[in-house]
Length: 117
Image (cartoon, rainbow, N blue to C red; front, side, top):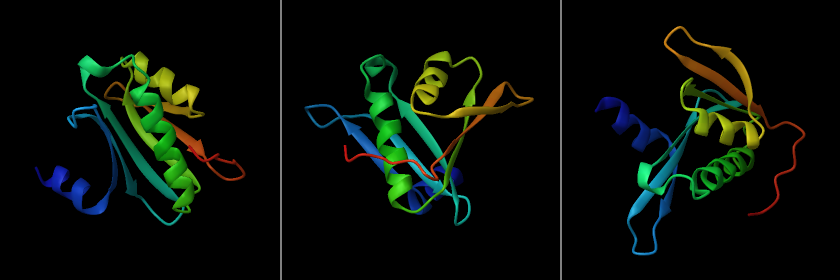
């Protein structure tokens, strides 16, 4: 519960809404330091495989760049091949595999140009 409240208070969140206004996914950017941020993305299972996750990630990367960050970092479950594919498609590179079955990935924003979406 503390972590969720910290995310709401300290993070920058983007929501994906269905046409009737229901939340179908979200992504959040968390400050690590002046150059780096962490990203978290979730799409509800019944709305996956529709491009929502890809657009959330692209929008977050664009926002992180606009906010002046140089690097976006994330951790994803190694078994979540769909998410790993989306992150790689959006330019993230694998840094390492963690002991708990997670994969650390990062995207270097320096020198990249992010077009308006």
